[in-house]
Amino acid sequence: MDIKSFLYPKNEVSYLTTSSTMKDALDKLEACHYSAIPILDEKGMYYGTLSEGDLLWKLKSTPGLAFDNMHEIPVVAIKKRLKVECVALGADLDDMLALAADQNFVPVVDDDRVFLGIVRRKDIIEYYTRNITD
Image (cartoon, rainbow, N blue to C red; front, side):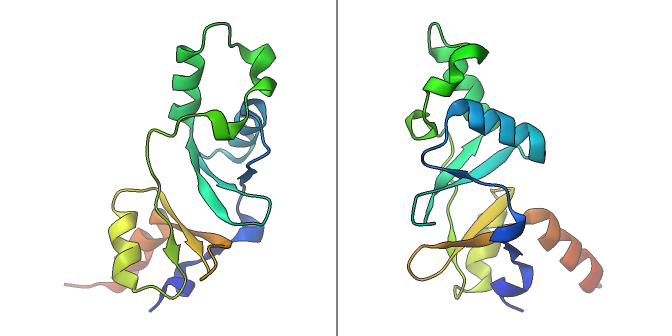
């Protein structure tokens, strides 16, 4: 079993780009029902992950920020409260499992850090539930 076996590919994952705004993020999170979403740069490289909590803390800590002016705030200007680590496609499965213990999903990248997709913790748990017996 390897990381590729668990990969939920990029073409099926909702994500933001570094040129997205806070309004874009809120709209996309609402549409895809994610609690956190990957951010990619203009070359498709993994940049980071933005969570609902990051948006709420930004809203709370920015005087004058409201729903009608969120389009003025770039997602790259929003402090990320959690650092979501990525894993290379060829990494050991144990590396990915260690990250999945603390993250809802693990972003997967190639050797050049280009985003390939995610491994969802839910899929890992379902696999082991089906395949591990006492």
